[in-house]
Image 1 (cartoon, rainbow, N blue to C red):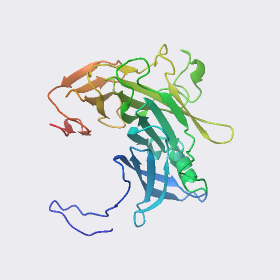
Image 2 (cartoon, rainbow, N blue to C red):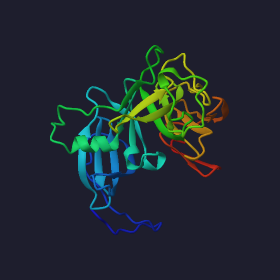
Image 3 (tube, rainbow, N blue to C red):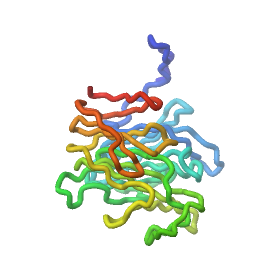
Image 4 (cartoon, helix red, strand yellow):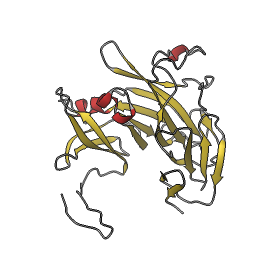
Length: 293
Protein backbone atom coordinates (compact mmCIF):
# COMPACT_ATOMS: atom_id res chain seq x y z
CA UNK A 1 0.00 0.00 0.00
CA UNK A 2 1.20 3.56 -0.63
CA UNK A 3 3.00 4.96 2.37
CA UNK A 4 4.46 8.29 3.47
CA UNK A 5 6.60 6.73 6.18
CA UNK A 6 9.93 8.53 6.50
CA UNK A 7 13.09 6.69 7.50
CA UNK A 8 15.99 8.08 9.51
CA UNK A 9 18.15 8.66 6.43
CA UNK A 10 15.47 10.78 4.81
CA UNK A 11 14.30 8.15 2.31
CA UNK A 12 10.59 7.76 1.74
CA UNK A 13 8.84 4.43 1.28
CA UNK A 14 6.67 4.74 -1.80
CA UNK A 15 4.83 1.41 -1.68
CA UNK A 16 4.89 -2.14 -0.40
CA UNK A 17 3.83 -4.87 -2.81
CA UNK A 18 2.80 -7.98 -0.92
CA UNK A 19 2.29 -11.57 -2.06
CA UNK A 20 4.10 -11.09 -5.36
CA UNK A 21 4.91 -14.80 -5.48
CA UNK A 22 5.07 -17.76 -3.13
CA UNK A 23 8.51 -18.67 -4.54
CA UNK A 24 11.84 -16.87 -4.24
CA UNK A 25 12.10 -13.65 -6.26
CA UNK A 26 15.44 -13.65 -8.07
CA UNK A 27 15.28 -10.45 -10.13
CA UNK A 28 13.54 -7.07 -10.26
CA UNK A 29 13.79 -4.53 -13.06
CA UNK A 30 12.15 -1.30 -14.20
CA UNK A 31 11.15 -1.09 -17.87
CA UNK A 32 9.26 1.32 -20.09
CA UNK A 33 7.02 -0.30 -22.68
CA UNK A 34 4.04 0.62 -24.86
CA UNK A 35 1.12 -1.62 -23.89
CA UNK A 36 -1.28 -0.46 -26.59
CA UNK A 37 -1.13 0.51 -30.25
CA UNK A 38 -1.31 4.18 -29.27
CA UNK A 39 2.40 4.07 -28.47
CA UNK A 40 2.01 5.70 -25.06
CA UNK A 41 4.83 4.40 -22.82
CA UNK A 42 4.14 2.97 -19.38
CA UNK A 43 6.60 2.33 -16.57
CA UNK A 44 6.48 -1.21 -15.20
CA UNK A 45 8.18 -3.18 -12.47
CA UNK A 46 9.14 -6.69 -13.63
CA UNK A 47 9.47 -9.49 -11.08
CA UNK A 48 11.03 -12.88 -11.91
CA UNK A 49 10.63 -15.88 -9.57
CA UNK A 50 12.62 -19.09 -9.47
CA UNK A 51 9.63 -21.14 -10.64
CA UNK A 52 9.58 -19.23 -13.94
CA UNK A 53 6.76 -16.83 -13.13
CA UNK A 54 7.16 -13.29 -14.46
CA UNK A 55 4.87 -10.56 -13.10
CA UNK A 56 4.33 -6.97 -14.24
CA UNK A 57 3.31 -4.12 -11.94
CA UNK A 58 2.14 -0.63 -12.93
CA UNK A 59 4.41 1.73 -10.98
CA UNK A 60 2.67 4.76 -12.49
CA UNK A 61 -0.56 3.81 -10.75
CA UNK A 62 -1.08 1.95 -7.48
CA UNK A 63 1.53 -0.74 -8.16
CA UNK A 64 -1.22 -3.11 -9.28
CA UNK A 65 -0.26 -6.33 -11.02
CA UNK A 66 -1.40 -5.95 -14.61
CA UNK A 67 -0.24 -9.32 -15.94
CA UNK A 68 1.74 -12.46 -15.11
CA UNK A 69 2.68 -15.71 -16.79
CA UNK A 70 4.91 -18.71 -16.25
CA UNK A 71 7.63 -18.92 -18.90
CA UNK A 72 9.25 -22.31 -18.34
CA UNK A 73 7.63 -25.68 -17.73
CA UNK A 74 10.16 -28.19 -16.39
CA UNK A 75 13.10 -26.00 -15.43
CA UNK A 76 14.14 -23.81 -12.50
CA UNK A 77 15.18 -20.21 -13.04
CA UNK A 78 18.43 -19.45 -11.23
CA UNK A 79 19.11 -15.89 -12.42
CA UNK A 80 17.70 -13.21 -14.70
CA UNK A 81 18.50 -9.79 -16.14
CA UNK A 82 16.78 -7.30 -18.43
CA UNK A 83 18.16 -5.37 -21.40
CA UNK A 84 15.97 -2.27 -21.31
CA UNK A 85 14.74 -0.02 -24.09
CA UNK A 86 17.49 2.47 -23.23
CA UNK A 87 19.97 -0.18 -24.33
CA UNK A 88 18.56 -0.75 -27.80
CA UNK A 89 17.72 0.80 -31.13
CA UNK A 90 14.07 -0.21 -31.31
CA UNK A 91 12.62 1.79 -28.42
CA UNK A 92 10.23 -0.04 -26.15
CA UNK A 93 10.17 -3.08 -28.43
CA UNK A 94 13.74 -3.86 -27.40
CA UNK A 95 13.10 -4.75 -23.76
CA UNK A 96 14.49 -8.28 -23.53
CA UNK A 97 14.49 -10.45 -20.42
CA UNK A 98 17.14 -13.17 -20.20
CA UNK A 99 16.68 -16.17 -17.90
CA UNK A 100 19.43 -18.51 -16.75
CA UNK A 101 18.14 -21.99 -15.98
CA UNK A 102 19.19 -24.99 -13.92
CA UNK A 103 19.65 -27.03 -17.11
CA UNK A 104 22.32 -24.64 -18.45
CA UNK A 105 20.14 -22.78 -20.94
CA UNK A 106 19.73 -19.07 -21.55
CA UNK A 107 16.16 -18.25 -22.55
CA UNK A 108 15.22 -14.83 -23.95
CA UNK A 109 11.81 -13.18 -24.25
CA UNK A 110 10.69 -9.82 -25.57
CA UNK A 111 8.79 -8.21 -22.72
CA UNK A 112 6.20 -6.77 -25.09
CA UNK A 113 5.48 -10.29 -26.41
CA UNK A 114 5.21 -11.64 -22.86
CA UNK A 115 2.70 -8.95 -21.97
CA UNK A 116 0.66 -9.74 -25.05
CA UNK A 117 0.66 -13.44 -24.14
CA UNK A 118 -0.13 -12.84 -20.46
CA UNK A 119 -3.11 -10.60 -21.25
CA UNK A 120 -4.55 -12.91 -23.93
CA UNK A 121 -7.25 -15.53 -23.46
CA UNK A 122 -4.87 -18.51 -23.44
CA UNK A 123 -4.80 -20.81 -20.42
CA UNK A 124 -1.45 -19.75 -18.92
CA UNK A 125 -1.54 -22.71 -16.51
CA UNK A 126 -1.06 -25.24 -19.30
CA UNK A 127 0.28 -23.04 -22.11
CA UNK A 128 3.69 -21.37 -22.15
CA UNK A 129 4.95 -18.48 -24.31
CA UNK A 130 7.36 -19.19 -27.14
CA UNK A 131 10.88 -18.01 -26.38
CA UNK A 132 12.53 -15.58 -28.79
CA UNK A 133 15.87 -17.26 -28.11
CA UNK A 134 17.16 -20.35 -26.32
CA UNK A 135 20.67 -21.79 -26.29
CA UNK A 136 22.90 -23.97 -24.15
CA UNK A 137 25.37 -21.71 -22.33
CA UNK A 138 26.88 -23.96 -19.62
CA UNK A 139 27.11 -27.60 -18.70
CA UNK A 140 26.84 -30.12 -21.53
CA UNK A 141 30.03 -32.24 -21.37
CA UNK A 142 31.95 -30.45 -18.60
CA UNK A 143 30.82 -32.82 -15.86
CA UNK A 144 30.85 -30.00 -13.30
CA UNK A 145 27.18 -29.04 -13.17
CA UNK A 146 24.91 -27.54 -15.72
CA UNK A 147 23.21 -24.48 -14.22
CA UNK A 148 23.57 -20.89 -15.37
CA UNK A 149 24.08 -19.27 -11.97
CA UNK A 150 24.73 -15.63 -12.95
CA UNK A 151 23.70 -13.46 -15.88
CA UNK A 152 24.32 -9.83 -16.80
CA UNK A 153 23.44 -7.63 -19.79
CA UNK A 154 26.66 -5.89 -20.76
CA UNK A 155 26.01 -3.07 -23.20
CA UNK A 156 26.76 -2.49 -26.86
CA UNK A 157 28.46 -5.29 -28.82
CA UNK A 158 30.55 -5.39 -31.99
CA UNK A 159 28.51 -7.29 -34.58
CA UNK A 160 26.94 -5.11 -37.32
CA UNK A 161 23.35 -5.48 -38.41
CA UNK A 162 24.44 -6.91 -41.78
CA UNK A 163 26.29 -9.87 -40.25
CA UNK A 164 25.22 -13.41 -41.09
CA UNK A 165 25.74 -15.41 -37.91
CA UNK A 166 25.41 -18.72 -39.73
CA UNK A 167 28.68 -17.96 -41.49
CA UNK A 168 30.47 -14.90 -40.16
CA UNK A 169 33.66 -14.02 -41.96
CA UNK A 170 36.50 -11.60 -41.36
CA UNK A 171 34.84 -9.23 -43.80
CA UNK A 172 32.19 -8.39 -41.20
CA UNK A 173 32.99 -4.76 -40.64
CA UNK A 174 31.92 -2.05 -38.25
CA UNK A 175 30.85 0.30 -41.02
CA UNK A 176 27.24 -0.80 -40.54
CA UNK A 177 25.31 0.21 -37.46
CA UNK A 178 26.12 -2.15 -34.60
CA UNK A 179 23.00 -3.80 -33.23
CA UNK A 180 24.43 -6.61 -31.13
CA UNK A 181 24.45 -6.54 -27.33
CA UNK A 182 26.84 -8.16 -24.86
CA UNK A 183 25.54 -10.82 -22.49
CA UNK A 184 27.66 -12.32 -19.70
CA UNK A 185 26.83 -15.67 -18.11
CA UNK A 186 28.38 -17.51 -15.18
CA UNK A 187 28.05 -21.22 -14.60
CA UNK A 188 27.85 -23.78 -11.85
CA UNK A 189 31.06 -25.14 -13.38
CA UNK A 190 32.96 -21.95 -12.45
CA UNK A 191 33.30 -20.57 -15.96
CA UNK A 192 32.28 -17.11 -17.11
CA UNK A 193 31.31 -16.61 -20.75
CA UNK A 194 30.71 -13.58 -22.94
CA UNK A 195 28.17 -13.69 -25.77
CA UNK A 196 26.97 -11.30 -28.44
CA UNK A 197 23.21 -11.19 -28.98
CA UNK A 198 22.07 -9.88 -32.35
CA UNK A 199 18.51 -8.71 -32.90
CA UNK A 200 17.35 -8.93 -36.50
CA UNK A 201 14.01 -7.67 -37.74
CA UNK A 202 12.12 -10.20 -39.85
CA UNK A 203 9.95 -9.44 -42.87
CA UNK A 204 6.82 -9.33 -40.71
CA UNK A 205 8.37 -6.86 -38.27
CA UNK A 206 9.20 -9.31 -35.48
CA UNK A 207 12.56 -9.36 -33.76
CA UNK A 208 14.65 -12.53 -34.10
CA UNK A 209 17.40 -13.00 -31.54
CA UNK A 210 20.61 -14.88 -32.36
CA UNK A 211 23.67 -15.56 -30.23
CA UNK A 212 27.37 -15.72 -31.05
CA UNK A 213 29.46 -17.83 -30.84
CA UNK A 214 27.14 -20.66 -31.78
CA UNK A 215 29.66 -23.52 -31.60
CA UNK A 216 32.75 -24.26 -29.51
CA UNK A 217 35.02 -23.94 -32.54
CA UNK A 218 33.86 -20.39 -33.25
CA UNK A 219 35.48 -17.31 -31.76
CA UNK A 220 34.41 -13.76 -31.06
CA UNK A 221 36.29 -11.30 -33.25
CA UNK A 222 36.96 -8.39 -30.89
CA UNK A 223 35.92 -9.87 -27.53
CA UNK A 224 36.95 -12.89 -25.45
CA UNK A 225 34.43 -15.67 -24.96
CA UNK A 226 35.72 -17.72 -22.01
CA UNK A 227 37.02 -16.56 -18.63
CA UNK A 228 38.39 -19.19 -16.26
CA UNK A 229 39.48 -18.62 -12.66
CA UNK A 230 36.69 -19.53 -10.23
CA UNK A 231 36.87 -23.00 -8.65
CA UNK A 232 33.23 -22.94 -7.56
CA UNK A 233 30.00 -21.72 -9.12
CA UNK A 234 29.82 -18.10 -10.27
CA UNK A 235 27.47 -16.12 -8.02
CA UNK A 236 27.36 -12.65 -9.57
CA UNK A 237 28.56 -10.58 -12.54
CA UNK A 238 28.73 -6.79 -12.55
CA UNK A 239 30.13 -3.88 -14.55
CA UNK A 240 31.61 -0.53 -13.69
CA UNK A 241 29.31 1.14 -16.19
CA UNK A 242 26.96 0.07 -18.95
CA UNK A 243 28.83 2.46 -21.25
CA UNK A 244 32.24 0.98 -20.43
CA UNK A 245 32.20 -2.74 -21.18
CA UNK A 246 35.97 -3.01 -21.54
CA UNK A 247 36.09 -4.83 -18.21
CA UNK A 248 33.73 -6.55 -15.81
CA UNK A 249 33.70 -8.22 -12.39
CA UNK A 250 32.64 -11.70 -11.32
CA UNK A 251 32.35 -13.35 -7.90
CA UNK A 252 32.38 -17.02 -7.03
CA UNK A 253 31.23 -19.41 -4.35
CA UNK A 254 34.93 -20.04 -3.66
CA UNK A 255 35.21 -16.54 -2.15
CA UNK A 256 37.06 -14.93 -5.07
CA UNK A 257 36.29 -11.72 -6.95
CA UNK A 258 37.89 -11.29 -10.38
CA UNK A 259 38.20 -8.19 -12.56
CA UNK A 260 38.49 -9.21 -16.21
CA UNK A 261 39.65 -7.60 -19.44
CA UNK A 262 36.61 -8.27 -21.63
CA UNK A 263 38.48 -8.01 -24.93
CA UNK A 264 41.48 -10.21 -24.12
CA UNK A 265 39.96 -12.57 -21.55
CA UNK A 266 42.75 -11.75 -19.11
CA UNK A 267 42.53 -11.43 -15.35
CA UNK A 268 43.32 -7.84 -14.35
CA UNK A 269 43.35 -8.60 -10.63
CA UNK A 270 41.61 -10.73 -8.05
CA UNK A 271 40.50 -10.47 -4.44
CA UNK A 272 40.19 -13.40 -2.06
CA UNK A 273 38.65 -14.09 1.33
CA UNK A 274 35.00 -13.36 0.65
CA UNK A 275 32.16 -15.70 1.56
CA UNK A 276 28.63 -16.16 0.25
CA UNK A 277 28.69 -13.23 -2.18
CA UNK A 278 25.34 -12.92 -3.93
CA UNK A 279 25.55 -9.33 -5.20
CA UNK A 280 28.14 -6.90 -6.53
CA UNK A 281 27.76 -3.19 -7.24
CA UNK A 282 30.28 -0.74 -8.66
CA UNK A 283 30.00 2.83 -7.42
CA UNK A 284 31.99 4.92 -9.85
CA UNK A 285 35.49 3.82 -10.79
CA UNK A 286 36.94 3.30 -7.33
CA UNK A 287 34.34 1.70 -5.04
CA UNK A 288 33.10 -1.89 -5.14
CA UNK A 289 30.23 -2.91 -2.84
CA UNK A 290 29.65 -6.57 -1.99
CA UNK A 291 27.70 -8.59 0.52
CA UNK A 292 28.99 -11.76 2.18
CA UNK A 293 32.15 -10.37 3.81
